[in-house]
Image 1 (cartoon, rainbow, N blue to C red):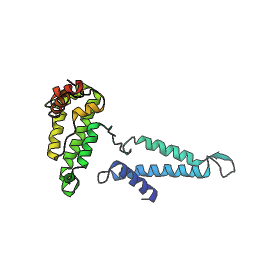
Image 2: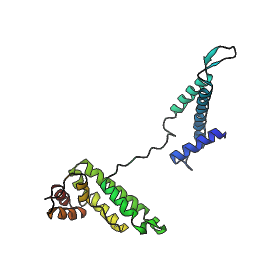
Image 3: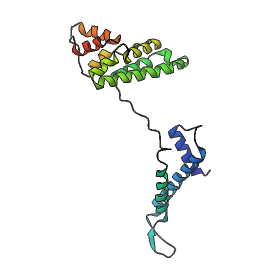
Image 4: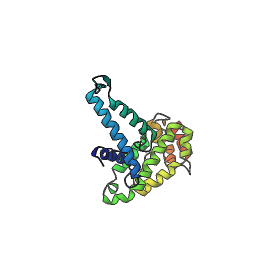
Length: 209
């Protein structure tokens, strides 16, 4: 395999996590097209759009046709070897607080902590889902806090990881969607009930009742 084709091959495998499960013949054909298109593009960039033919006439650079044809063939492959685009999660109070708690838990950072990798991922995902529910509406957050919702699952995972869970009530206050009245006990009671998965607690935290 030519060096330029091999270089494209490695780029595609790295950007798509294809190692060990790829149609090698198809990937080589695609990588060859990309390499040829790049070569044609480089020649045009180096020699210019207009060149002289064998008769001394000025004509468009022949590599322009090669570049256009290979680009069309590459498009025909669709997104089969397109770089994998990983979704970017928006930051939120629950997600940030949970990540901080995990980072501060020494038993999750050493070699033995690898066995908790699945639970750590679950905790971060559940925290993000709670943030998304809170961003959507108070009704969505109340549903997430029901006994069969996301919050109880989040608390269970936090208990398994032996980390302090982030506060749903504080998450509501952090975004300004309902702040408990200062000096009152209702906010603290709502905080506790919300952490226990009670929808009433979330509503109390949002109204300061």
